[in-house]
Length: 374
Image 1: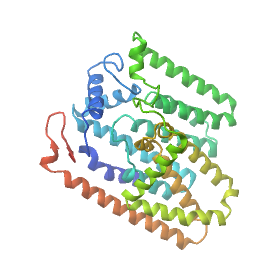
Image 2 (image 1 turned 120 degrees about the vertical axis):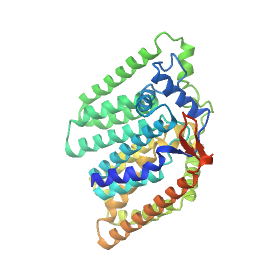
Image 3 (image 1 turned 30 degrees about the vertical axis):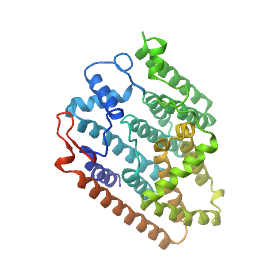
Image 4 (image 1 turned 135 degrees about the vertical axis):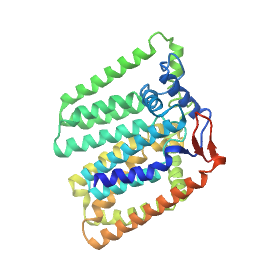
């Protein structure tokens, strides 16, 4: 099954290795400049302005070194992250529900995740978080203590990609693991010390104002200076975002329909008394909400992309867990609907991308070498 997942990911992601819907001179240009500078031996913060953690410029710099100094090399690095992310989603789904639940969630992620339209940086943190979640479920359900250092190593890496997401997820992991063994809280302390040491090395010699330029966490999140909305305002923005997302893609109605059918079945079958079901549901919901913290703080709709992969896992876990208990015909009908929906989504995506792969949409500059929709 894992081989099928990997092959599906390669097929679905390959069209994106030389295509990007839009390239922004400001946001993407900043990232590309950073990757180029690191490739030349410069340091983030000291030698160029950088708003995020120091890890991803080195990651993408490696791809520039291997595949050449152009945007296509960066996109290859990005889709490699997405491939690994889908594999982790499959492994999580297989652990908490079934192999097919993991497969459908992974394919849905590759087809429909909105991703980050303004930076190449954040995808790395999302993928590492999915790896940490896989380790958490392996530890909780199979007592595999090997995954505890795996989890905290991943959290350390997340903090070197986007520090606030590293910190928020570290707190939640410490709560969950610390209840099992309070000694695991020491891993959290070591993670904090590690972050402090790495960031101190990178900003050593800089003035406070220079450091603050790279980490402007005063009013907004990251480099956003907009005032924070009220909690009610954030909820309204979330509902509006969900409505826009559902209406913009007909395939989302399939998930809504499946949930409408599954929720009453869950209540009827008293799934709230199933410890495994409720524990998994609560853990996924908690991580979904924690990774919405930038959206809750800012009300900026595209920041829901941080939590979307967890939502996909949550939905397919719920539908699979409810669907496979009871009428088998119902389960296979649901499976068929999901499969047809994903085939339609894949066909639509391929058709849309190929329509732009024409000479007029090609950036022929040596450092370009990709197609865009612009």
